[in-house]
Length: 71
Image 1 (cartoon, rainbow, N blue to C red):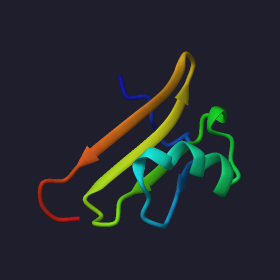
Image 2 (cartoon, rainbow, N blue to C red):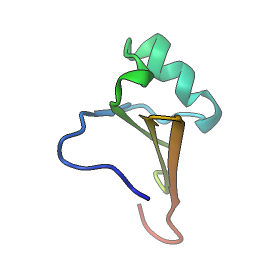
Image 3 (cartoon, helix red, strand yellow):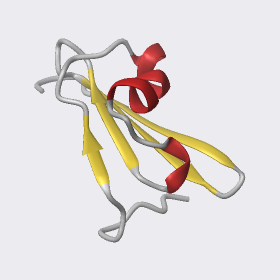
């Protein structure tokens, strides 16, 4: 179930990222705590994939979307 809404705080990492490093980027470079409920948004170099990291009670949730066409 999606639990994202307008009450969440969204943080966009503006540089293209390797999706495997996104949790480390949230803590080390963005200086934020991924466990506080904020939503972290990451895109890839080609801008056809997006990943959102979000902490919910019970664990980290990863939302991922790959576009077939366009950016």
